[in-house]
Length: 339
Image 1 (cartoon, rainbow, N blue to C red):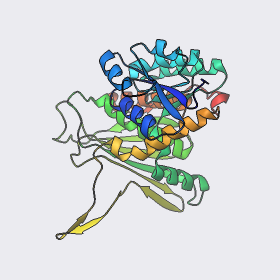
Image 2 (image 1 turned 120 degrees about the horizontal axis):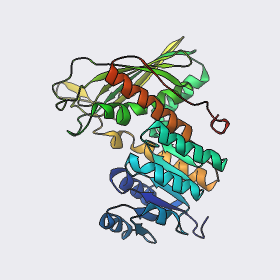
Image 3 (image 1 turned 90 degrees about the horizontal axis):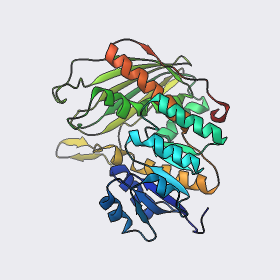
């Protein structure tokens, strides 16, 4: 640890998520400060760094991670750049909070996992923020308590107002359903073993060439069926919902948020515009928990195994989507470090 009282954090990537993390560490989270920002756009990095005392702008992640005032790193760059940054951070034995995906495919995720295994201790937390959402935490606690008996099915709805024209069918899995894949593994404490993707007739709101919505069915090694309605162009807003069906009852989250208004012969509330708004508190809680654990010398939350497992399930999902058939998930045996 450096001489600074607060944890010196390098933020790699200063796009939407990276800039939001810079804002979060600077103005919301306690115990940390932004000591470096990294972006291939030198002007953008400098613009952010200039507004923060003691912060240096870099264009090269390796140079930033070798700096004396960097104690930990948040990786918020595009997914294809994650592996190199993660491997460099692990070479320096630096704690990492890596936005999902850990890496874009299972093979590269496995290389990162193996690098962490060589260290002999965990260093990486993956930014699956639903683990820190108040409603998901309540559902997890209820399922773990056994009060409702064993889970049998988990229904999920993931709706987005719209997507940009370049959004592809594969991104429905890799960028959207990946969150339900991870959340299901976490909520149930089980691994996903197979994926099937079904496609109804596409909405006229979807960009040309995008079959949207889709219906994803997953099987777990504990015998639970998990389904996800992914609807990326629903038009009305961003909505994430989940319902666990158990032996002795059900539990549902995501039905409504905030104030309910009755006015002019109508009633209703608001729907979040996007994931940043819906999970704002979860992101704050996630980063604070990461800082607190790092200052204690610990690593908590979803890690390399979860990032690797999610990548493997995504690969099976993309194959199932393209081939129209049930596709099994291939995972290595879970190493003892992650049990």
